Structures are given as structure tokens and as C-alpha cells.
Length: 284
Image (tube, rainbow, N blue to C red; front, side, top):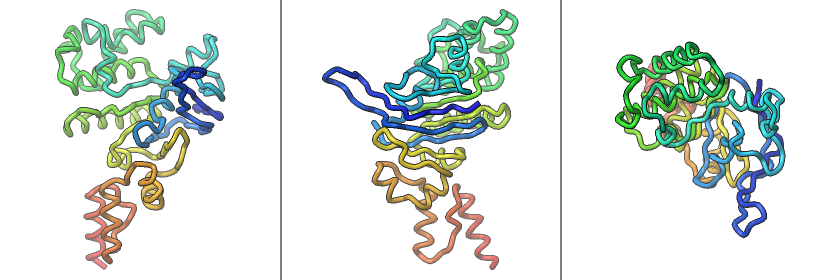
């Protein structure tokens, strides 16, 4: 059940003096089970691209399909296909609006036409998944939580829809390091335990290198690079810099060490990997 973008072009304000082409002829396939990272400088078209994946935006030219169903269609099939793709925006706490946490998480499942019993079970399961005790938090206002907890509620609302694909646009923005680690731990659990395909937009190259199995580099509304993160970070440093993004600090470190004559593995993606590589060199 892939998401397929076929020659997708999108223009804001088409036919007006403010017309701006944000995407140009993008063709790609997102397969089930992938963890895709998307990077690019501000204004490159990342957010516009991911908003096409669940039909929030429809292409000016080309089409987006999920399992062969055009998301721009007005059929029941297209509606169901759009529900398969969950979206968590940057600052997802701005998506919260109900008076209690349980009601907020229940909003999506309710619109699916589920029974009250099914809705309540989905809310409980989603809250359990993101580490919020149902009895403690269900009747609390989401607006009396910490930033990290509010973000968990927003993610739980998407999880409760049981999407096949989860799109996250800078989900860790504004969080402290501990909050960021918690959010990404939950996302990785969702990916590994439930097989949800994840599409993550992030400026943090270290996060991308740790989690993503595939990397898309967007520049000027086009896919500049598409491949394994480590391959892109190793082979296309200058290309990335010209596109306004940089390689992760660890990749910069391994490149520097190699230039200085210490043959550390350039496939190291964490500090622990670098240490292990240096330790292995000592044993030779």
C-alpha cells in the first residue's frame, strides 16, 4: 500500500500577483515499513510536500495516490485513503482544542463512525502508548499540561486513528533535550512495534541519522537526493552544504579524524559508534 507521487507540482496563489511555485515535478514512492527523513533549508518545500501525503493540499499538476487511490478524488475510497495517513504538525499542541484530554484524542476515532466502546478503547490504548495514565489524565484539560505532555496528547490523537503512515513535521521543535528524546522514543516504538511507516521532517541531522532508513533532501521544490542517510552524509557533503543543510556532527567528526590519519569508520552515526571504532583500531 505505497504512497505514490507522480510528477507533483504545487503553486501557491496560482493566477494571482503572489503566485509562487513551491514544488516542481516531484515523483517518488513511499513504501510501507519505511522510516523516511526529509531535510532541506527553510522554504525548500518540505512542509508543502508532506501536506500532499494525506490530501491537505492537492497538486496543481500531477497526482498523489495511496494504494492506487487518488487523494484528490471526492469518493468514499479517497476519504478512507486519506485517513490512512496521520499528520502531526510542527508545534502539534496547537492542534488541541477539546476541554479534556480524552475528548481531544477521541475526536478522530469519533469521525470514523466507531462505537462508543471502540472509541474509548482506542483512547485508552493511545494514552497508554504515549505514557499518559488514563485514570490520571483522561479528564484533565490538555492546556494545563507541560509542552512535552501536550505533544504526547497530540500524537496520541493521531495514534488513535491507527494510521498506516505517520507524517511528522518538526515534532521536537521547542522541546528541551529530554522532551525530544521522549517524543522520538515513542515514534520509534510506533514504527517498530506497530509497523507504522514514518515520514519525519527535521532540521536535526543527528536525529535523522539515528532513526531514518531513507533520506530525502529537498531543495528549491525538488528532490535533490534520495538514498540511505549514511551514504548521503558520506558522499554528498558539498552538495548538502550548497543546499543549505549540513551533515550530522558525528559525520563531520569522522571525516575530520580520517583527514588527520585516524581511519575511523565513516559509517559511525553516534558518538558511541566512533568510540567503538577507535577501540577496534587499538586492537589491531
